Length: 341
Ligand SMILES: Nc1ncnc2c1ncn2[C@@H]1O[C@H](COP(=O)(O)OP(=O)(O)OP(=O)(O)O)[C@@H](O)[C@H]1O
Ligand SMILES: [Mg+2]
Image 1 (cartoon, rainbow, N blue to C red):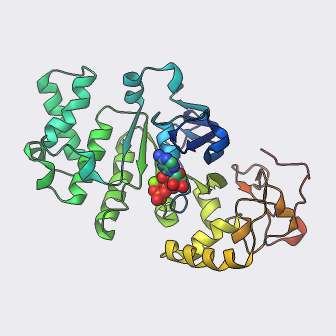
Image 2 (tube, protein in one colour):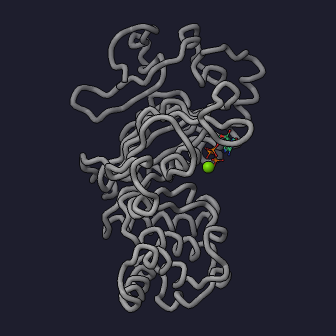
């Protein structure tokens, strides 16, 4: 639970996941005319571990979340608490995994009271008598920082931050193993967003769940998570402990994210515009080639993830031909053995 308390048991296993959007919609059949969004994505989340996924808008974060939630087709393996989508019925599956999204208003039914919304999953799974459900709901409202009397209110009577607290409570009420929070604080203003972030931190201490926390903000993810993966154009380009990725980034894109805080998106757009003017794309090159200030002929071939952690240290993966960017002697040539994942 919380930073640095992860154990070794996996709650989520994502292995070699690819996903394709076809022109006519979703599917994995018409690959030839499809736009591939996720490229060979693999990650695991341990019991009670908070795992952060960062990357700019459009890189594929929500697509990965939707694949994990079983909402879109994908190639590869995804298991939640040992259950694969394909072999587990949907209702059973929702006991293990719940999601909190960016916009709490659209996630809540305007015609239902908060109490009714929170009762719904308990009813669907036949949990408790009505009185027991009432007690559970009151307790959960308290856990997320709301008075039990909020159960009788409607969503429109709540502030944005309060609505998001309700969504978090509704996600937690079935005591799932994994919560996916997709930009759960991005729509809130800064002070309300940090209150929600603190709430995640607090309930983490009291409860027993893992989380995939998706954000475009590396600072936020570093604050909350044990481990971090950085995604660029559907590739995981770096992955490791929060400390390793934040304080010792190995990929030029991670460095860009760090240098561009707080206004990453604007900086990214500016850099992208500049670099795309000068560097022509190369077919089959590293996905980051056209933006990378270090790109060389090596990078015409796609790099694999390599482990740059020292012996005995936790895994720190970087998808780059120059894992030791600031140690020119450590530059690896394409085709060199060692460290490939
Ligand atoms: N249903 C869809 N059909 C076709 N393309 C889609 C669909 N949903 C997403 N995409 C495309 O997939 C890519 C990844 O989108 P995704 O929503 O996963 O990005 P994201 O990282 O969550 O971005 P954001 O930070 O803006 O939420 C984008 O290029 C997007 O246009
Ligand atoms: Mg998204």
